[in-house]
Length: 425
Image (tube, rainbow, N blue to C red; front, side, top):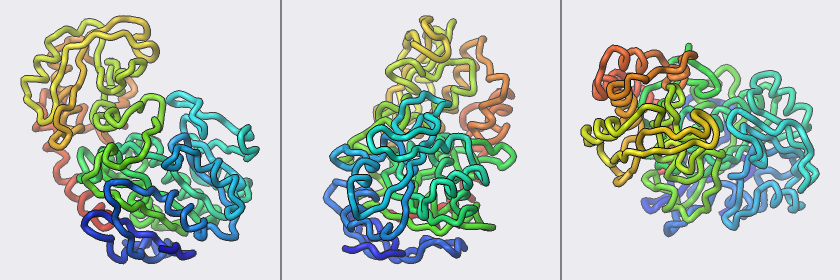
């Protein structure tokens, strides 16, 4: 099937193609128009880039193109899309834009690669990290591109910063008068449901620009449509999205047939992504979240914690989860080089596992079983959860059900909005 110059390729699954859906849903008037039928595919997923390339890059014909990407922007045979596009005369690639950790992935958390020329292609690489608004729009203008393409693997959590790189780049492209194209990749932890608290706008930061839930259950094309329709309403971007074929909302990453590339240094496996939306909350405490180990976000602990925490967590009988008393010595980050105690989270049934509820339960039991528990002094937990609600309830002695019940109404409201932007069955 060909890809029209202004088309939206629809996603297909075992239940058939998604019907005609405008990328301009819910009022994003200048976004790209209508979905055309796609076909499902036998358990293997074709990404947005794979479909774009197979169509000869007709969506980008005659335009100077810049790509926002990182090491996850690969083909099914693990070539980087920048290298592939640069070598293809059918597309005029003139710039690359790197997010947190950088285009080639050389920087740790909270870092980027800066401005340089890529040794492999000679293309100029511009740094987008912590840039937004007019300053980022000026970078797009200076690069000389007509169209900005986004292709990065997400992890499915609100505080994973690549989706806010997407948002910031969409906003900047609108300001600069550039077209924006999003190439889809799977949500590695499925797209079944939105979970957890919804960000309150007064807590907006780079780990959450807009009011979406902690685990959003969307792909990047779906998020792009949501952003354009709900949050960029004063100046939406001219948006095209290229969806996948073969992906269904219930698919975990290992069902896709795609190769996994760590999207950031502390996201080594799809199993990390499975727990991340819950256990990343430990960044907001004085406990280690497992950075500096081979199991980040699965190992949690601190000096002085013994077997009591694992016992308390197991006593809750959380669906899909078990906890092992664990001891480890992080090689960097919190407690570097010191042996600490805590738990290892084991997911034995991912179908029933709820990462956000599990993360809250671990916070509650950690505070109750270890007298040394403390929040980070900068209240980072409020930025991660999107309000003061989780912190203040836990401090007041609330149990897991009371904390998770507090966001029920706002989550229901977000789910209703989210539903209008979903593209896959």
